Length: 213
Image (cartoon, rainbow, N blue to C red; front, side, top):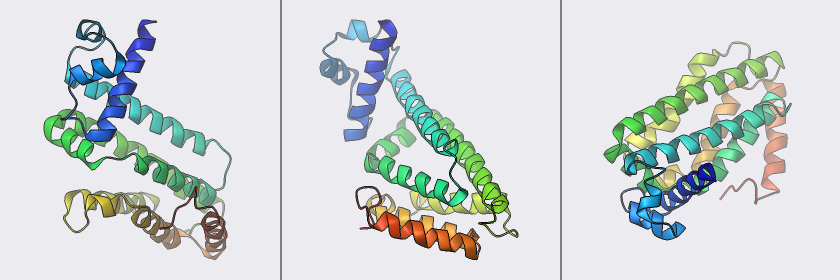
């Protein structure tokens, strides 16, 4: 019972943070939404910083599990990376730039910890995918998987620190898909590119799963 209530508290806070950002949501707001008293809330959560940390760790764990499920699904490297891109597009629909900037400004230690964990997970996943693609004869043999993984990560992180793109542009399906295609075409051999074209056509036929707008 206690663990269920704590889970509800964290999930409700995550929902509210994703809607209007972290700074604009108070502990009173969370209590009101759940219909519980602050006394009850503080039996499970010490303060807002702990709640923010719990929300971030829950979301990070769920993302890890989702990516791991794709990795274990038995797909080839290109199918796998298409599925990862579809997952990213689904995640980005709930992305709120205000939440990101609130986390970075008001909880920098949590932000740095989450960012470090995300970077490590992404790097390991990308290196594993590229190695798998090379073994399957779909990616070029001369590709340095660690260099390419870091290069792709730098491309996706750069807009966050730059005014070249607005948050809306950076998180749009158009940007995500073009960055993805730029990456995968650059590492695929001819056999791999045939599969990319095949999967791209299939995805375009199903806008619910792969919005190109």
